[in-house]
Length: 624
Ligand code: ACM
Image 1 (spheres, rainbow, N blue to C red):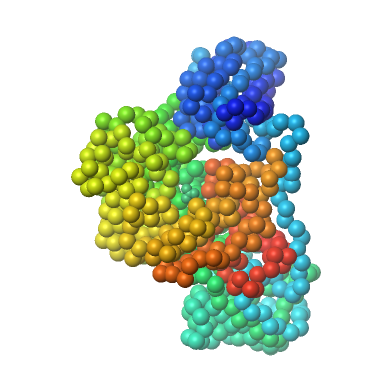
Image 2 (image 1 turned 45 degrees about the horizontal axis):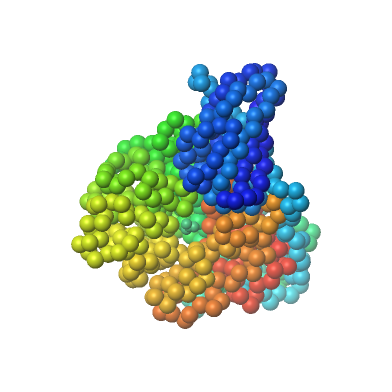
């Protein structure tokens, strides 16, 4: 690449300055152009630029008219002074950049890492020790009770009768995850028989394996328990056949049941789109880890990925970011932007694939905030008398919330929820509710009139008013409602049938339980997998919720210090936010091993957890 953008950061007033050096190492003389770039460390209100004139910002997207041409072999300096926060690592500067030439051409700039001030500590990127294997079983998550005697080489397992069809499904899962590895199961032939026995006395989703040299019994209370027992057998067989450190039990028992009923993983496909193939593979990995919920974050400011029949073309329009439009490229998008959404057939394939593995897919339509993409695709959802830019979200989006005073808002929301309910039969519907800015609707005459009529004060009470109406719609559809923890603000919603996802703090989780809500713990400081794994400058990722090395993710106990009720902690959930994660390679770098460690927090009793063992065994988990 003959054009580059090299960048460094110097601290100072207003969180310092970016120093951008444009280098033309090619043979083409370039005229004074418009520099376009994206950075999550945004320019603050009143930022100064040297070397060019700031002409537009939209969330992470910046446009600067350069003051001079960039001749072949030349360089050009641009300083952006005044940032929203200090960058913490090499990935928190410019993520993508290009030049728009006066004649209409575009030239992409290869972007270098953000360089810190001299002396800034660089590493380590990830502290993930080899760990220790005391009991040679390749199980992840670790079972509640392991009392086995003697270890040998694994037999070929022959699931019989009730176990035959689920055994074939687990064999197929194993083949998808490890296409080149020896198969753990066959349905006929010489091998050790696996006999399934129903035992209603076992805990929901649990199983008990009893080993002897010529037969294995698998007791289970339900279909999920049978599948979990078969997956445990497949994991032990796989590890023993592929890694000398592992073996297979000769006698004794493994008795197991999950710690929590909700063992979830959230996946944001709005910030960066990820296709159906990646979602299907993630579901396979979740099943292998005995997780049972996919929280599919399908919409956000940056994209609406769910198709609609009522609003034909919605996902095409609102799933696209493009140069020269009101929704420009963001994050690491090049000048071509990005476009992505799922067809109904893909949604059905993903939903059914998950269901066959015991995983419920909960769609999230993130409302009333985080809807920039929707607002540009469906007109009439904001107050025309509200001044543009009267508030900005924490991510810098102007006026990005549905207006709670407009009848049109409720018509559209009702339609979109009904369509989501049709695509996801039986699943709870998650209605977002996070990060609505405190200034939202405060300059909307319609919203202020509503507030006066209803005796509501501030954005939180207006949001609660909106959410209570949405809760009525979700109930009419016969569904439970999921929402982020802000749904309890401003008077909240009815806890009955509501599941809140507590991301802000342990204290918030405790508060919600005390207020009577059922809660899933998704703590940003431990379970957000886009957070950097190390404090050094070279560790990639976000840092706003904390630095989360694998050991810290594992050490977090979601239940510690919570009140007894009246609400309940029903589970835990990893969150894969994708502002930084626009490819499978980047997903793999950040998601593993932490996803497996959180799966163990969800499944394994607190007193059976062990960091050195988990560090070792999380290395066996397949990646995307
Ligand atoms: C969130 O992190 N905004 C739920």
